[in-house]
Length: 156
Image 1 (cartoon, rainbow, N blue to C red):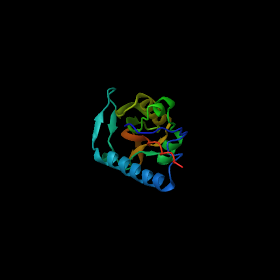
Image 2 (cartoon, rainbow, N blue to C red):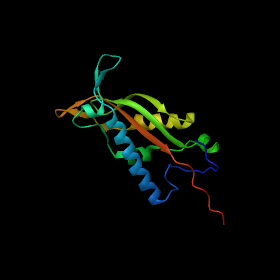
Image 3 (tube, one colour):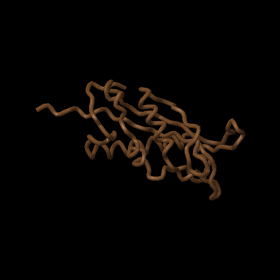
Image 4 (cartoon, one colour):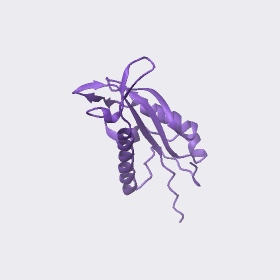
C-alpha cells in the first residue's frame, strides 16, 4: 500500500483523469454490489435484534448520493501522504431502519490515518435502508473507501 511518490490531494480523485475516475467508480460500484450480494440470510446482533444480509432482503440498502458521496467526503490525511500510503479501506457496519451506519469496524485497512478517515466517511453517510415487504429492516454492509496512489508528477 505504498507508492513511490507523494501528492497534496484535497480529495482522492482531484488529480486523476476523467477516464480513471469513471473506471474507478464503475469498479467500486461493482465491488460494493458483489459484497452485498455475496452475503445471505439473517442473524442476531449482540442486542438480540434481527439483522438482514443483502440477498435476504427485497431491496438492499443504498447510499444516498451513491459512491460519489463517499468520494466527496473523503480527504487524504497529510501524514498518510507523507509516507505515500494509499489503497482501499473496507468498512463494515449495520444500516439501521433510519438509514444510519452503526457498529462500524475496519474489515481491511492499511495506514491508521486512512482507516480513521474511512470510518469517519462511512459514519457521515445516509442510506436508504434495506427493505422486506416494503418495510425497512436493519442490514449489514461493507463500504470501500479508496485513497488512490498519487498521480506521478510530470517531468519537464
